[in-house]
Length: 297
Image 1 (cartoon, rainbow, N blue to C red):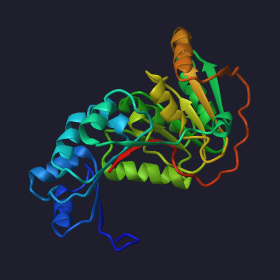
Image 2: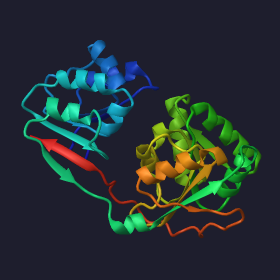
Image 3: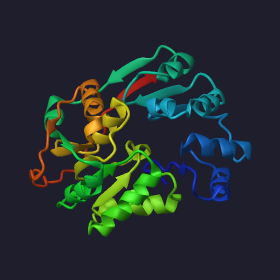
Image 4: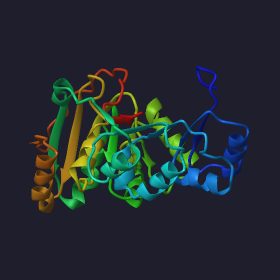
């Protein structure tokens, strides 16, 4: 039950479809849904979009980048015309324009840019490592006091690195696509509570992690493109707090990572072996996430 006595329901995969269908049939005012699971429920005739007055697409650029665009357009096609449509997106590039042109009428753009202060409080570093030393260096960095979020490229690497960090004496959890939804929720809750201070995650988690006081982000695997780098790094230095971002770079990746930082408009300095990281910062309550918004009525 919401603050205005509205009936709310979160709809996503990994949990009982039957239970979600039962809840929908009892009547819901606001649904927060992943595209795939909502399509499943529509196919089962557990709900209808015929009476939707307001449709919101959050992470619109992510939806387009990750191949969800056909599902999103299919759902928006089933929403009656004439209502309000809102798109929230960190960036308005690529196929996001497809959604804007197709579904928004006379759109009004609202932009909230990052402040210079927030950018100044994020310290970007590069640590050059050999492949054989990479896990040991990650354990050294993650073993410091404070919450550390480590990003890798694949779900198999996430599970393996979390185990390797545990073997090195660092309490670590993993968050990736192979986990069932209850396991994902437990991993994130333990990280948020601080009982497991290190979380190893894939890119898919970069936008969904909103946890107080993440002091250090480690790019164990450098991301493929600047947008992913910025989204990963943005999990620290939030709401005026300071944070550190370290990219582990193999010698053969040096030019590629330098190009990545240039495209992301980030200045990163080398972190020599043995250099101490800044002390853990005081944790502040997170503010609202900065993003760009496109709205049409």
